Image (cartoon, rainbow, N blue to C red; front, side):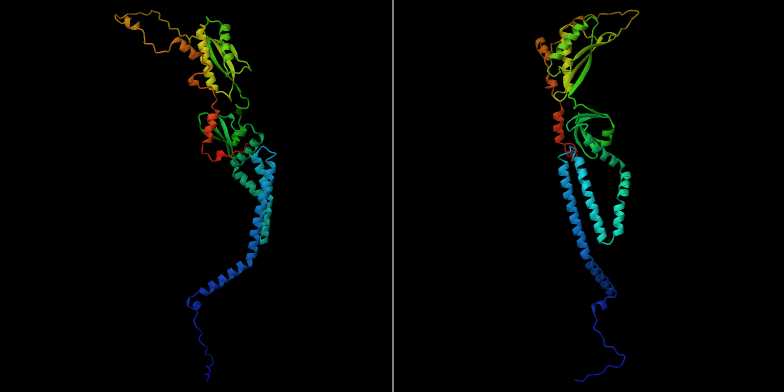
Length: 366
């Protein structure tokens, strides 16, 4: 074989490649190779950060559960137990963040994050002041426990049964069956009337008797009705007192106590008013209405129309029950309209159980 020498300065032609056919592809490939190389170099660090994050998260969760398990047996406040448990887990999380940032070469940023935690909390506190106030008020309510679940309270103009206490507010079921959520700051700052703390509740009403009636006799008759009724408490004892001498009646005030957990105060008051009115009627104690005197100086002329007298004297058909049956109804301790004098709290709680409020199902009170 013979070899032919190439002339000086001549170059041998290279076979064309895909990178030569597409202009600008070579720099992109080189950049991709650099990124892959950097990712390969950073992969051990990334894996180490993920492992540290997993270990820190698991350790913080275990510490939180352990502290919560101890505190829940010693404290009555579930919210305080959860809060303290999370506070114990917080240093572990901050340490994990510091280690991860230090491993990745962001040590200065890690120091800034750790040092600026207090400043960040201050800024968040100003930005979410109302939320923070409700949260702190919920902690104080869970500690002081001015009421319990199922008790009837009054705050401002709202009266209802306590259903739950959340970090935002207290949910009441009003006597009308409505759900009312009151912010915890209002619950903590405003006066609270707890009707269930002392189940005994004093009721009163006024009744007027005529000036011709004996006050002592009326007091005796009313007291007999109070002492004979099963829903009226004997201690503290009921009272029947003369209160005022009005224009046409002697006004008497009747006081008696009822167990609000067992009986409805509205139904019992209705029954007592009915019984005392019936007893006064039976014993001839007059109960006149307010007198209004009208004077006609010239007198009144009365004219009788012929043929109308028979119609005015005509007897109306009997629609009321016989006297004996009516007496039995009026003297009964309760009527069908008053039910069994039972309290409405059980019915309200049953309605609350059927409600679909997601937040109301959880409470900070046991």
